[in-house]
Length: 530
Image 1 (cartoon, helix red, strand yellow):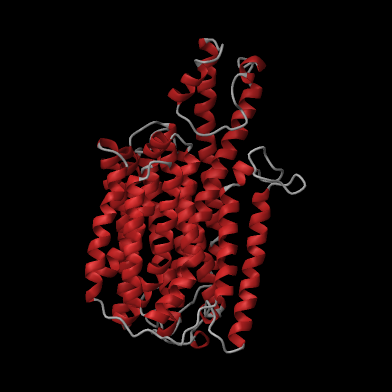
Image 2 (cartoon, helix red, strand yellow):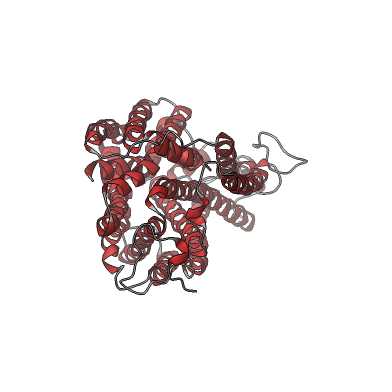
């Protein structure tokens, strides 16, 4: 279990360290924070796009050998990340980490299915969720301390050593034989990967290229329309074509890229929708808080770690302890209560957040959201695992990987675009309403690419204009108020998403307490409820 847990932790530690390193990377590479967010999107996009291929590789060649090869690639990518001199190489390193993660994710699920059964399996799934949360805690603590006193690079250097340890421990894992008869549907791989990459890339560039009409930053336009929303629509269409192709291939008796049995019932589809929502919300919060603390307030990475610690610790303990409630509450009940807690926590944060993230009311909101999030991530994964037979464990892993990482990519991208878009709207409105910020001063500032900056940085920009001290003070006031308003509105929108997710949670299985089905029970034999 140590090897399996560490396999999960190296992936989670990597992606959780990126928001903590936000301020350091912005300074090192001289890029805006949204460029660093592209690294997160690149990682999640590659995992989501190729995890179904990874699942077939696991089935064809065996979980343990494929897992070891992927860990070697992840180790090399971590080395590239640690020593990357430019933002482009950093993004390439994250893409390589994502390619390795696309194989590790289904391999972990297959290894759990092969090494554990019954109640031990449910506990192992919970441990995997706890490992993910523990890695988030460690990333914020270690990344915060190292980022404050040394720099952001050593945190990723740690992954080189841990990956080597995972590689050595993996030789102690029991692994079933590979199945050479499993064929890989390359047409399906192309369709799925293209769909996911287009959706992720489209959301990531909504703000830069334009939500509707193309901006000057767009690489091209379609009759004046931004390519970003077009990419999203084309990606969704390709996703539907992939499902049609997979169904036809399955009916013809050929091996599909994804066994559609894992999303056959309404309960399983509800679990996938709910999982997408909760992971996207987590990604949005994990990007928003470090952005505000490090870039807006100009505070250290360790301040980010301290601010996020209540949330990460709550997710860790909830993911570990929620398994004990499976015998008393149905998945439907836990799902609904989980999203209600997420909604309440985000609404609370939207109304109480100020410039001090360590205030007790803010900590209460983060803990509330963390309880809901930790319970949901473990529950929803367990619903999918227990609903499918052992031989489909790799497909469940790939489905989980696709859902989680597409949600993380979309959540991070939407968070960046949403907050920057809100900031731009509020700033432009405030400037227009301010008599002190005259058109002459506005002409000396680039208002076409408004982004999150600290007041110190704004003052240095204003020093290069003809602004008077009173005008500089007014610009700082507008910047301070606009950033907080953008964050509050963003949190309200996130609360709305959490509230809508209560509906798919109501479609989760409604088992009688104590009758959680054993692994291998067919979907049609389960009790279900509305």
